[in-house]
Length: 375
Image: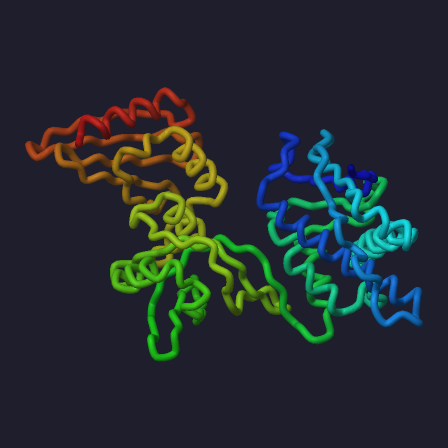
């Protein structure tokens, strides 16, 4: 037999929550929240009972936070506090146990509210409990938030910025962690010191092999192909300093060798180009143009076909090139309107020109067919 009490219904906001579903990785955050609530409840019990050195045995045994449903209104997971029959005797012996757990919830919500308002001088939780925010909110993405206020007023909203404030308010630490998805090259492996070195843009970060041991084959392959420009796609936990600079990487979740012609990576590289990029001339392609082209490519290009090399043009357009067995295909995509000119040539110096509008899905089908018959 279980006893259930409505306990918490945080409101999640962001693009991922518009379909009223809860991404599985956020369950990790709520699991950490449950741990924090129970630990703070014990602390409050000791504060209010100064003659006690320990909390009662079984204080939180057979008590758990459970997801009972998801309401609409973005995504609102409903959590209930559940006690099973064996714990009811404990609750009878200590009728205020549930009260302490509710007080802990309220104290955590007030702490988040204070951080959102920039009032970090009064730490309601205590330093050691702030470490839980290394896990709570870790899986939030940019533009996402969790409103923990009981009336959904927005007063206690946790997002990446508020989480960072909480972690940096710890007296003993001047850094914080966050989930990262990055591309990097492996420039060195040091077997003596059991480390490998990642190059991320203009940064060089040494990492312990032990933290990525499951991916040692990938690390070795990327290192052996370093001179060829090999990149790995990494999902991990990044450690940042107060200036938001990545200083360490820990807890590697995945690591994969990227295709040398990976379109997303190449478009990200091109997005960093500035005007006058070629000997004092040349127009930058433009971030929005590249982003939209990347979305079109991911949606409409047949990924079973070869990927193109991509280059910027002096006019701010992009040129795609395929060197295929039967023909060479050049495609210039204009940044204004996605009008495109395709040039098809073969070994017999025969040329064919095709005009395409890559705003039109049907013309992507034409492009796929041209690439397919050229193989």
